[in-house]
Length: 397
View (tube, rainbow, N blue to C red):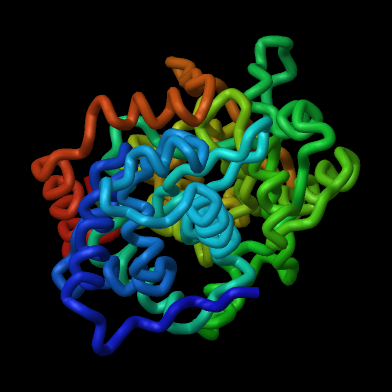
């Protein structure tokens, strides 16, 4: 298994320029790759790409292309043969730096940092890469990710908590998503929990590490590149049900035929941690449900309050000093964890007023993201909201 490249202490001026050009090029994609003051993003690129690979990546974008097509986009003075270029592209895909698809003729595409390059490192993590990635998310990428007009991921609610009607869309039921991917399902180790282990903060919700499901051609990629193993439909369903039983949140790519189903918690998952840090998580994720309290049944035991991954459940004192549970809907992401842990079924999920229908494909999702890139004003507003809540009390309006 290839290892991450160490940052070069004495790289040539041309190599250094190649990484800076690649950073700028990645930043032009639908899910941007912003610059930070301390340069963690350049250290990440140096670990994932050799200088030659960085120059080759400049001829790629988020659209899947064959090696011949990529070769035609290279500068005229590029001397490598098409066969050599394809071999190099396959090596890059094996290192998790780019995506290789094998539906028909092999095609290759650039990946966003999240969800993409970071997750593809689950079998290749080093302490140095973990530190660079953590720094990058804190120093700039988190605000870029949260301020995209169309979220990359969406929440899949707990199935038994859904209203018992025939109006539930297939894209909101994880069992249907898994069954639809029959023959193309894999399970991979959770990169977020491995990162937490390396940081000395192991997950409090589960001891499992192999619990992230890859679907469709992402499953084929996971098996081919050695960072996942094939599962049957029954095995995948068992894995997902076990995750729900442990109080984990199911997240998937925001498309009709998703490529993954992650089992997340706000302790380890970078995506949930980013959501939890903002005052109104519901504005930064795609969800079709929200929790509703059955007030007459609630005994204010507090189990849901301590279990909610977004701190949306809270105690509220009444005039007679009794504590009742209140739900902050601006923080509720409709995952249904509260319905799993409630011992008396006093919480249920109900549909939100407006249904969010996901894009059909990854290409359509990226097109929608690209149509309205986050501007500086939007990002600064979110930074200010987070700072105000840190200073004056978490999640204040």
